Length: 63
Figure (cartoon, rainbow, N blue to C red):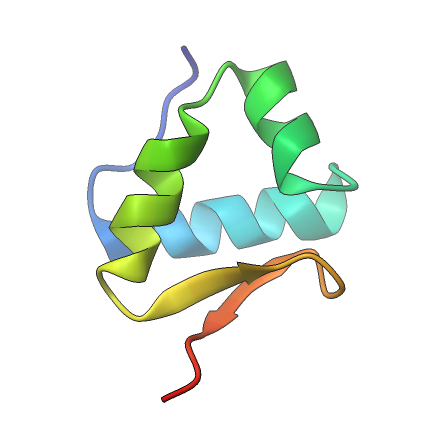
């Protein structure tokens, strides 16, 4: 498994940067980095962010 920051805010920055710069989707990121998709989704949901496939980024959750 790849290195992923434990802090959710750092994780948000790390994943969004990787998605912007290197990966066409979250699935590709998780597959190529051997990263736990559900854990990423849960951690970022915990700070109010959800994955937007159209933007290929985690964005603030609609309230």
